[in-house]
Image (cartoon, rainbow, N blue to C red; front, side, top):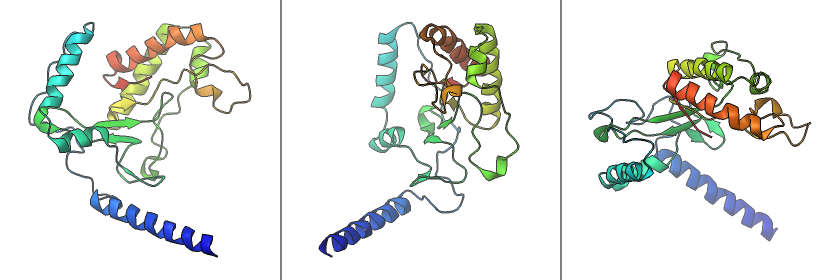
Amino acid sequence: ARSCRRLGALAAVVGIATYTWARWFQWGQGTELPPYYCTAQTAPFPAVPDPASPEALRRWASALVQQMTAREKYDLVNGLGWFGYSALPGYYIGNILATPRLGLPAIQMQDAMQGFRTIDARIVGQVTSWPCALAIASTWNGGATWRWARAIGEEFRVKGANMILGPSVNVHRVPYNGRNAEYLSGEEPYLGRRLAPAYVRGAQEGAGIGAVL
């Protein structure tokens, strides 16, 4: 009985804390989105130095961070758009607020490398069913992978996302893994090493949308 009371008290504390957290960040209030969940900018995006120079990139990022307020830094590392395990209306899978005064737009991340994941009932039937990654991998063709990623990236861009959560490059170690079709490497690490860069370039250079490994 004592254990049950303790569990009940713990559940009550967690519930109150969750509700307070939700109210503080305006979660769960219909489809209202917070300020700065947008691509609006009051300043141009800061010019990025040569990507081939890690030290220049480090200095560039450091200078931006030094201009941020404590709240802006917090927003940059704090995701939002979920209440428990439920995605809230109007959000993507991953969401980071913008810093308009420094020219930094919101980061709006979406699953996944094989196409735009439908998480909102309003867009059911409005997304493309692309060939799976394993089918593309079976071509051993970097050019085909580039064109596939570009087309997927263009659809993401039209739907408002600016980053693809992919590509997936796990090597098939267990044949009955239900998600093997999602992985670009198949059973061969060399294949993933060849095709993953082609995918990233297709999404970023072709469609102008970020891709992450």
